[in-house]
Image (tube, rainbow, N blue to C red; front, side, top):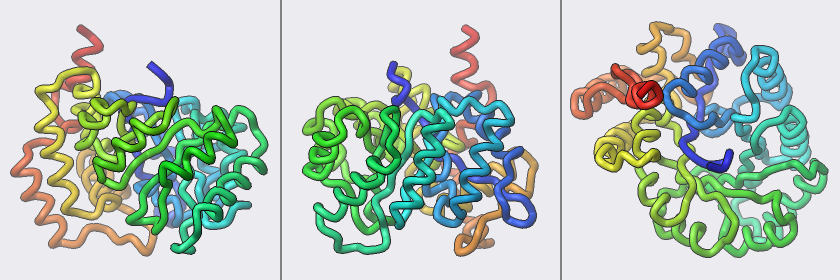
Length: 307
């Protein structure tokens, strides 16, 4: 299996009381996610509130995780910013730290940029990073970024940078788009942005998923990835149910309740913690889906490992 494949959780970023990143809690969470079946963890994606943190904060947190013994070769870091120099600084830092890859949002403020403009921004970033070992996973999430990566744009980037453009996270939720990526781009790792599309992605030639809800469902996603197809319906049901609520604050709320750590609920503005109405809706979801996979015993993944 390639390092860049499998079930990856788009991790939350725990916060201290002053809303600074909490490296101790994050290190514990990363280790827990690995124990719950994740092949790897993505930091500073959408679920990680990336764009609510400064470049300096993001660099320092990665350094702290290294100091705490986290294996950065199993970490993908979101580094895409609106300003190319910020993307360059974060990407250089992640590559030099030994991370598996960087996850690159397009520059997301201007919404009507041409293909030429988008290619120029990504090309400039890679050229200025100037690291042959750099591995780029493009981040296609047009609902949030306002622009995305088309197949022609990806072909242009791959033609220019050969082995450095290695894959994409497709968070569009569009199965036709996912199929185009899988079938029309050779030597390219396509990750579904949701475990609900994991079975579909694998059938089409994709390599796995990078998912926000894998923070609480990775056991089940890993079982499906490993071939337990009978678990797919439950996995999809849970994911679809959780989509009714805001992902970041919901993941943090669930993890805080499970680990009995109220501080895990903290979010940075403009995101807010779950309202009472949201919490009531969440209770209804849990009633309908049953205990969330990562909170149930025994673990499907751990049982399989010990068998």
